[in-house]
Image (cartoon, each protein chain N blue to C red):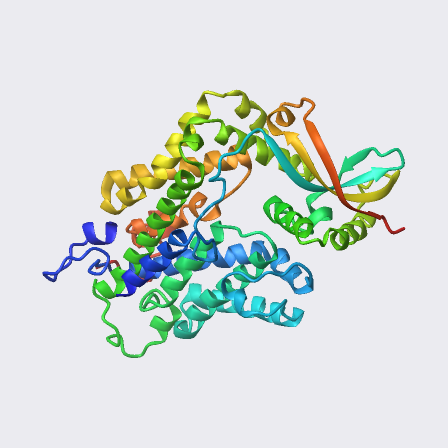
Length: 317
Length: 137
């Protein structure tokens, strides 16, 4: 894992994840990336979430929504959306983070649960919410935040590399790889070897295209070509399961991590191309952020992005 | 302790084989699938019985096929296809692309050879109408 391999702990303990060390800027960048991604996702999908306010039939609570007896009042849904958007802005900017952080994470958990309570879970929302919950409950706004700028005493927080900042990042990495392993296990558990050796993947591609066609959508232009390439699909199926089960290799860091990330990203590109099913968090690479020294996106930004030396924030220690 | 708790929480749905949110078994596309598949949809039907496709927005008030298909399937399985048909008909009435000859909306399941369907060949194996309703004028 990057946070433990690239930044060896100074203490004598060396438990993976628990003793992972990182600078505060890395955790802050994870806050900015996950928060901005989730906020944009919420805004892009706003019509879908707003439309939930009018729904009355077919509710079957999942996630946080199991606590509800039935559909919420429309005004409650709209209020939750509005509060979540405002809290999301606070989350990204690190403003009143102890309040806005958990509020945004809980808001997204609630909204995604509620949206999934009408007959269809969207599994790509799981990782978004899990990352938000981890980051929201961590000291991710100690630097690179409005809270940090407002602080009158610069030494209120230690801003040295420590497990305080590395542990949440390592936990997010762990969640990432475990979710991929679970997805791989599911294919072997429910599909067995037939999933790899049979025509299942080709039929899934054909099914996704046929479903879109019957529902009046536009199927992938590659689906028709894809189903004719019969010999490709068992190889693609084996590669899919291998990539998912091999996810823990990414925790080793270095080149093997990057090979896994590229392979996983290409897998998602293939799913998008042939089935028109997008997993936005890995496709936009945000899912893989905890595996890298992401603070360098800012500290080592290209010269054209630097206004003047005096405006640069403190570099990673 | 927290790390162990989070790990356990991630694994519990797998142990009990119970999908949920945000902790999941990630079952999507994990089962084997043959080339004959039953799909739920809603269609516009004219006086001759000729059917034509609607749109995702008309059928499910969403642009997401997973959501539209999932909710329609759920409506059929829970016996609320009639209610869903009326909602679709109402949206269809305001849709510019609705064929002028449309008389009714039908909520159906169709069994197709999906590989043949994608290849543009004849694919319909079976068709079941679960609900029908008139399009309001």
